[in-house]
Picture 1 (tube, rainbow, N blue to C red):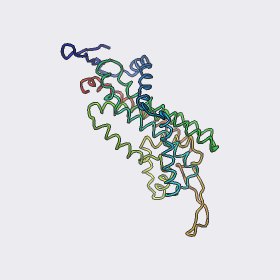
Picture 2: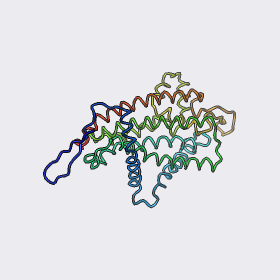
Picture 3: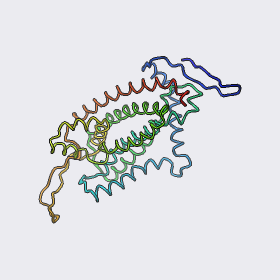
Picture 4: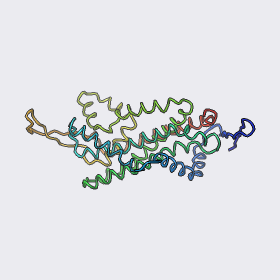
Length: 319
């Protein structure tokens, strides 16, 4: 690929603009990205260092984040709202694990091109590296938070269910594909429209409450069944993060269906009822749903990648 340098007067720094081919060739582009994987690693390390610069606790803050969520929401849902979800901490942490990776990646990716304007305007490299580095930096937090979850489960001898764990790699792969697609999209849009990063923060806040991270997805399922609104299940599952969250939760949480006591007005136990923490679907059904979301995410990734590739030729000018 050629480089076209443009100078803006004697002694001025030379800006570099890429001369990309008119169309994206994914296989050739992947080879090019692999060739600069060392740069990707350096950018991930830089992103992590900048995030925790001048911080006494450093990466420990990433581990404190889910603990804070756990303390607040456990207090609200176990005492104020009475969820009746056993081991609610594991359910919550397994959902936050996926959501934090998704939201943090998009937040960093939206600013990745703008924050590295000096690099983008002076040196040629595949621009996709920058939003991908944002996902890598968020992945560091993901690993640390996963350690917190494992320590918590080990400390309280929480049981593991063998076959359910198979959903974890499938859910993670689907999450990464979907996140990469949106990361490329918001990164390219934010170069031209700087309001993108602010709209993204609002969208993520709304999206969190439309996704079964904090509340049980089974409760939504049961409500739709009770009101005979079966078709709304497809609307619920049309949110790609809903099946992904269900995959993480089903992989790590041991109680998709629980039996809870029924009490009268005086607080006496008069019976028991079944509560679906997660939708009562089989493991193969959920795996098949995740596979569909994965295929759709890969298709979305190709579309977002083409959009990013098309817009990246003008990044130097827009910045």
